[in-house]
Image 1 (tube, rainbow, N blue to C red):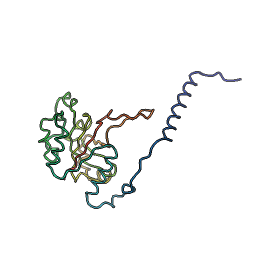
Image 2 (cartoon, one colour):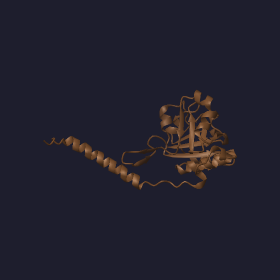
Image 3 (tube, rainbow, N blue to C red):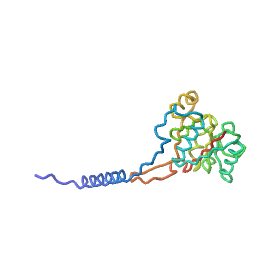
Image 4 (cartoon, one colour):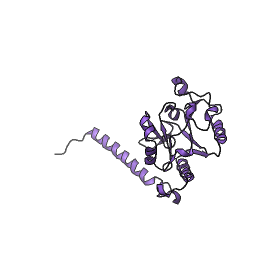
Length: 220
């Protein structure tokens, strides 16, 4: 005797089939990025001066959609920052936490101690950096006194100022070198490009859970 057909079972089955079909089509049509020979299979020991770490980081970061600038002097860093923040509301780390005398450019910025509505209204977040991971183009930011996490998460534009001694090949190198700072921090955030969110239909949206635009300024 045939089993009665459950309409609800048919609906669930049809939905499951449609979802799996979309995933199958997406996998077949997805484009795999071409990796240049210089970025293929690189090991930490293959790097020489720190400048090569910077080059690798910049290449990886730009591949993720990050705008990266390498400046030759503190004055050039401040000039670049001034162009990016001119006429915009800024949320920044405390003055003593920003390198290159950058606080002179954002002296009127909101800080982590400012009222929440002032922080939420910021157009640009300006931070330093505790680690720049060359292997992945990621920024490592620790939540320490004077380094509010909100500065890198709330505003739609995040500008990070990076010093040469912030660069590490991989995360393991960063963890080893910054053990004490990490232990003292309330949070460790890795920023790998602008915020990206995709739904089940693989529709990508930028800037939903964090900044839609990330800019890195590397100084001397």
